Image 1 (spheres, rainbow, N blue to C red):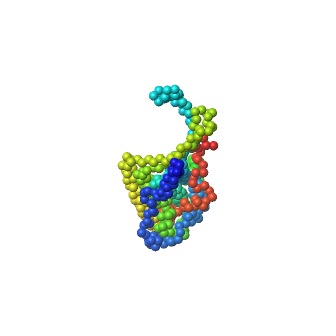
Image 2 (image 1 turned 120 degrees about the vertical axis):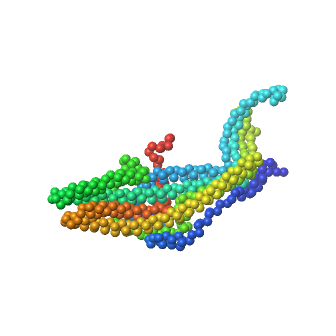
Image 3 (image 1 turned 90 degrees about the vertical axis):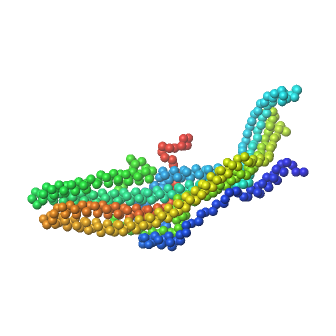
Length: 497
């Protein structure tokens, strides 16, 4: 005849064999958009000729051949606080995933207890003592048999959530690299505008001196002198605003690099050259874009987590089967704890079924299903916006290149016109009003040219940002790339050495 323990073990073995299925839907990744590689790269190639179908460059910032920019991006990836925040959130998700996985293991621990009781007269027989003491030392444990997959679905959701956090970290890394590059190029553009202002100021001072000499000789009027001085002041007034913008850009770089703006120092950015030479930009294919874009990866992992949580809630409709056990000693005194016959043990299954809570459980299931539909729509919207951003970035790049070419010709023509106007006026063959108009146009076109050069570089950065590249270098670099190497100086955890 089988003992009760053998019966329990056989029953639990049968339940364990049944625990191979998990309730709730099984996750399947969403289908990619109906866009072929030729359609993806071909439409962009029609906009700009510098498009290639190859793999997207990882360290795209090296294509600018600017060692200072490379160093700045490396420093930012290692010390940026936004990267550190994203890394800390990823660490939280991984820790919670480890907690979810503990659901597969027994739970419990050791216990030592003492109990003193006084019974009433009704609870005791004549002559039986009414006072009793007992000591108990035992190891208690319980194990949930994951019969309907609640624990497995919880682990699936935790894994997906950790994947989403990892993708968000990648997105922050890629965004920081692009922001550093954009800020650096904006700083170079400001330097170029300041150089234009300094050059025009010197030219206007020479022009004012010429008018004053001609005024003394009777060849010019006081009106001409006042107009020359007014134009000089209008050029000089541009410098303070450019200085303010330069300081703001330097401060922005300091924050990106995790530095205090008041103590941060930076070598001056070189003014942008007349033309930017960048090798053909590889755009990859739609599948590569979906795999590389961090926002798409995060949305896909959120969808997986939401799908798994449907199973977690659905498991609430079914019984919860646990095995509880205990082994230890029970005695009336501490001295008797080691005596024979004081051993006590318990083993048995516990089945709980919240039959009266099915309405609440079904409401939670419906909410989880709605959240999953929302996550799917968010994913689809993220993909569409990524494709839109990529297409817009290449169109902006083509426009920036065309604009720069036209600005170069405009600036050259206005500069020559201003030179000829000054020569004619100094020879007494022209009006100073013509000189003023030509110099004003020269100043405006040279500043516009500096802006066009900056915009061309920013357009290239926007392309690489839209393509989602840059974070891959963090897996290959020797420097700390998660921003979490050490806590900020003022936020060390209490009690940590």
